[in-house]
Image (tube, rainbow, N blue to C red; front, side):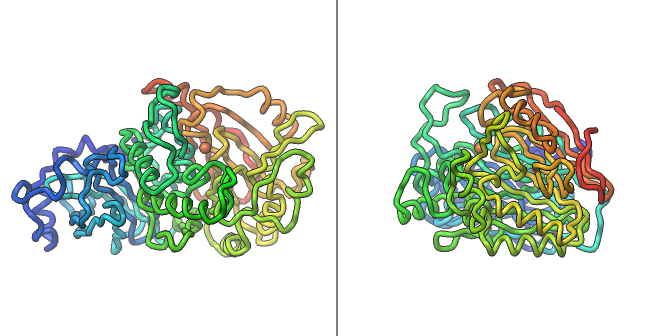
Length: 524
Ligand SMILES: [Fe+2]
């Protein structure tokens, strides 16, 4: 770890309950709660922090702290073994991991309607600062997490480190990549979708068993998050840094688009399922009040300023998109229909306005699906995805056009979904290598989805060889590590040799850099 003395829960387990109580009393909060062991635990007993803790969506003076009480995380009703009544939970924020310098503390109610999940929006913190946090419920202390506030909007931080992750099919492999992310000591983790997979898994068919039915209802979505969040490597990644999350398709159903299901489910029934999926997603993610599901919708596109170093435009390319199409030549007219949109008109206006007006050095689109022109067929044939930006050509043209017209400074697109690393420049005309380069895209590979993977895929390799704007591809598992300074963006494509066994080391498959004011990446 760069800073050393990380906040891995185990290293701080020695912090006593007594010091938590004293800390609470010192700021006049928490004193009215029962002392440890003095009152009956309001659930049957057992550690309720089995799903870990998290923080996210930081702003200059605060951050969201998350946990959920679940002493029996695999209870099949999805309720985690909690009784149907509210339970008080103390929380603390300190400037040091031993909680000697307590900064904020309070008590919040974990309510059964939210399956005893807590979202505490702590405010009044210093900008650009590191903090430590923990919870207490009954006699039980949570692990300690480390988090950060966003830098002051007037300040240009000299550096920042991002980890970019997506696609963590639990059954496909161990979460070693999450563990390695925690060890990278990132300032912020961007999670770009497929945190869970909704599938029913046949027992014994994969690397890890996930017993139970497909997630289709509120109970079964909740259970699926519980199954995933028990994983110690995932918990470590949450404890290491604040996360900025967005969902893709598998948090709801494979390949859903707006109000259209993959499997022909009628609209009303699908919207009910989607609402259940959104509710469970909110319950299990460190999101702000602005993302509380309302009706059948959920506000997920939002902006995060990292001082004047970077602005993150976090997109939702699922909820407002036109329906999927096919990627074969017979669908070309649909793919190129100017009425089609992957963002919806309102989000597109919001994005283009934000891109053109943000003063930050790096303008980052954090989003789900491949943005760059990607023809998957070698030779004169064409084969596009029917679900990424190649199926919404007019949307991509409008965004790239907006970047050009708005003289947007250093656009960088960060992407999940594809289960492969891909590094690509963005062109005003992708079929003309001599056309203007506008920005770059880094597609991050999956944490575990699709299993061990391989360095090169011959089919992709041939297709990519014909696309000079695409600089690199790897089908290993891993994540992106991005180091930003005002002068340079550097992405290291981090890969693991395997996920079918635990404990894989991590290495860099390739590194690319972009210099401020000079569009296009170069290999480092
Ligand atoms: Fe995925």
